[in-house]
Amino acid sequence: MKKMMGVCLALCLVFFLLPLNMTLAEEKESTEIVNSAKSAILMEKNSGMTLYNKEANKKLPPASMTKVMTLLLIMEELENGGIKLDEKVRISEHAASMGGSQIFLEAGEEMTVEDLLKGIAVASGNDASVAMAERISGSEKEFVAQMNKKAKDLGLKDTHFQNPTGLPAEDHYSTAHDMAVMARELLLHDKVTEYTKIYDDYLRKGQDNEFWLVNTNKLIKNYPGMDGLKTGYTSEAKYCLTASAQRNDMHMIAVVMGAESPKKRNADVTSLLDYGFSQYEGVKLYSKDDTMNTMKITRGKPMHLNLSPEKDVVVLKKKNDKKSDYQTEIKMAKSTDLPLKKGAHMGWVVVKNGEEEVAKVRLETSESVEKAGFPALWQRSWRNLTSFQRF
Image (cartoon, rainbow, N blue to C red; front, side):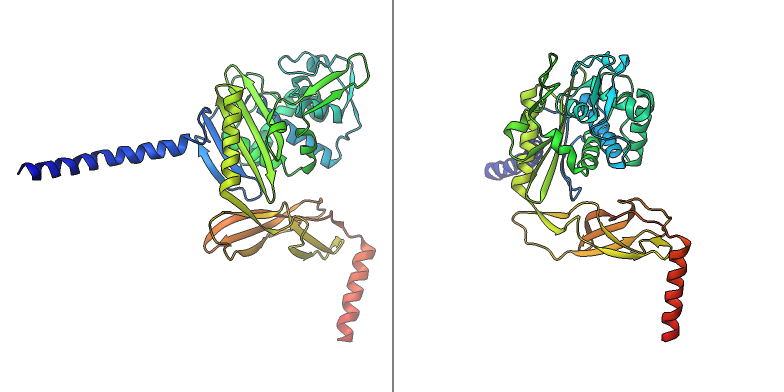
């Protein structure tokens, strides 16, 4: 009887402790990668796949990581031809008055767009950010409206900006997830990493007011493949970092928010990136330069338009898993309105592994298309008519 009671007691103890042991294992798994940050995410840029998530939708102050969106709008304006790198921007008193991180611009001073871009990307200059906001939109307020519109266009529901700098302000917030999406969009502009991966440089080189730029992201120097993107700190936000690193066909984006110190923030980011690169590998299916489809636009010039992926089409797989047979489907947009700019969204490249969608990349025009003039349309009609008659 005593033996039977002992067995029952042992079984009860096992079943009582089992959920606890499982919970502890789950907690260890969730904390051993990120230990300090309140919120974190690891996303692969090309596939858009999320590999790790710790309260990634928690609204928090982003501090100077706000400048990821500021840089995105600057890169778009450069690509659209609205500004040029060698253009000189006159600095307003308002821009020069910005506190916090700055490159010490003076009111009335003129500095090139490229140097201001360095000032933002490398030294996190608040004064440079406001100067560029005023140049692009006419005022800081209008630029902020543009930032919020872009956030909405990207489908970000948990982000709202009050300034282009990240200086403390009420109702200024984002999430680790939303920051990763913004970073992913920014990295579509390949040239931005030419600035974000600079460790140190100089502004006003050789002048009396020469200024030494040192990157606020020290991992640029220490982590293999690191090419950006933006640190952040305020007493409310604590230590934040949106980081990106590239190896082979994988481009990882790691975001941490609310870490207790720069050392712990960098440790969390390093841990996230190490996890991604050690456990996964990229399978590149198509290059962004590949022609995936060709459209015939009867009233366009040119009439035949090649369509390419917005970026390399890459799927991720666990390193120990076998390579799957992926199926690719092209989904075209329903209508085409002319004219079309280069890079216009014309559909999707969808990759599936069985029934599971593993990648979805925008399909874009490889060149701009204008409306064909009357002579070209007449010539095409005549050519079609004569070809029909010969048939």
